[in-house]
Length: 182
Ligand SMILES: [Zn+2]
Image (cartoon, rainbow, N blue to C red; front, side, top):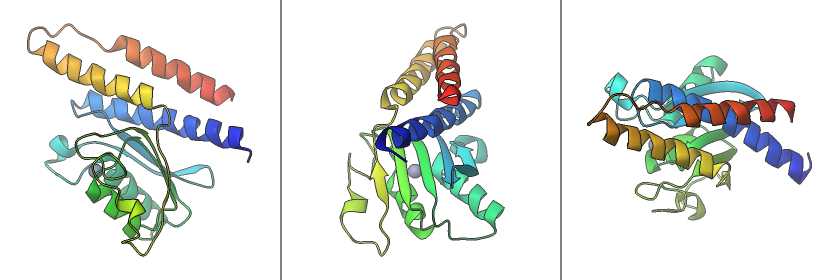
């Protein structure tokens, strides 16, 4: 795969992860989505559902990793690339190491809890017995806009219930079609 092809492929899967993030929004959860891909096939997917499940570990990444491990009937997910719309926290980085995921691709930085480069650089410290390749910033603007729109809606919904995130959803669908064509 050429560099351009790899970039397009990363964007294709990130668009998919962004559609999963909107599923979290539908459940009134912070919109973060994750998809685990092996040999360009989905093996697991998830979105943030901590509030819904009363589970502080139910971040999109953990849900996708659990889904994949059950599907594969294997607690190791070697060869997997995890696409997630937000920089992972320390818990999720730890789960990726335990799952032996090969590569992490994320979109927007998480300035409060990000454990890849924002607050900590867990994967650069060679403290783990497993290395994960990292690509950050893929469709970061889209993921950031989705999060901003969600929190804006939260603020507005205190005053009115009429706000609908139609602009963001239409934009994501358009990007999805573009990615399919590519
Ligand atoms: Zn997390």
